[in-house]
Image (cartoon, rainbow, N blue to C red):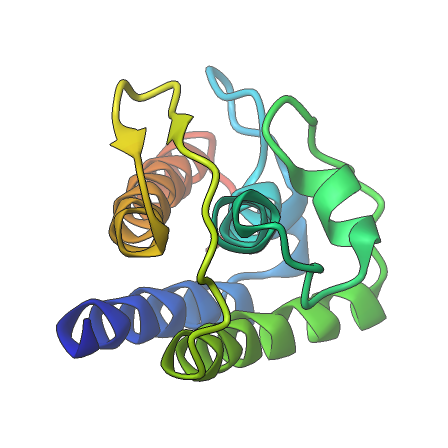
Length: 158
């Protein structure tokens, strides 16, 4: 699993780089053809990791429930995000990756409720969830890169 945790840390570093090096305006703009903005996609990765790994294993979330309720699947972008929330998200990107690895090493996920994702993948245990979560976050990273290109096409600064 060390390989999968290393991949997770790298995806999170990539997301953090976008969060910290994209203007607030561009983070919060919903480009034509998209349902959400760059910021939502990054925060959504945090929420879904908690649901896939902690909720389905019967454990408490490691983040405030606000993030889950605001950015879980089926929610829509808030275009009025405060700077303090952006700073919190930057912290959570790195911290929740570290915590997941520590919790995994401590055998925190001994129980797991099987789950079939909307992507058509069955998760049977925490290992499946961690591997799928990496794929899920990479999909959103791809969305973000597409959104950045769309914003360039709309003449917005990046």
